[in-house]
Image 1 (cartoon, rainbow, N blue to C red):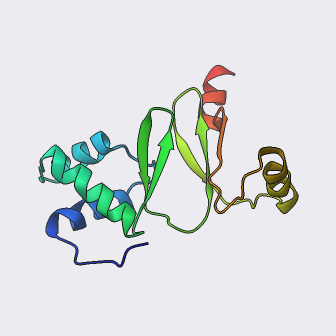
Image 2: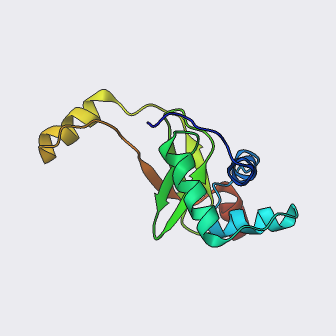
Image 3: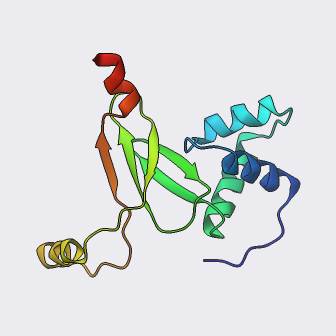
Amino acid sequence: MKPKGLLTPQRKAILDVICASSDHPTAAEIMDRLRERGRQFAYGTVYNSLKYLTETGQIQELRVGDACRYDARTEHHHHIQCTVCGRVDEVFAPIPGEWAEEVARETGYLLDQDQILLKGVCASCRARTS
């Protein structure tokens, strides 16, 4: 992790949007939310700011399918995505050590980090189909 530098007004505005979000927004969604707040930045500014905020450990970048989503919660955790609506939520249940050891044995990898993305159908989508 690089040291946290000065937050420019643009980076601060982007960080504020991510911190206020509970839904792991994409860059496009962040730009929409900035506009709703009366702020408008160039695409390059937003993407460069997201890269900086990720590299300095102030946010997490999640690669979910073809999209990158952003999360202000930087403590170690995993995610679950609804296969119907695309919603992404946090999962704090720990991964059993035996499972990680088995993955290392099976693949030959030396595991140095884990980021698990589980998929399923959220309660809201299940309620709509019941």
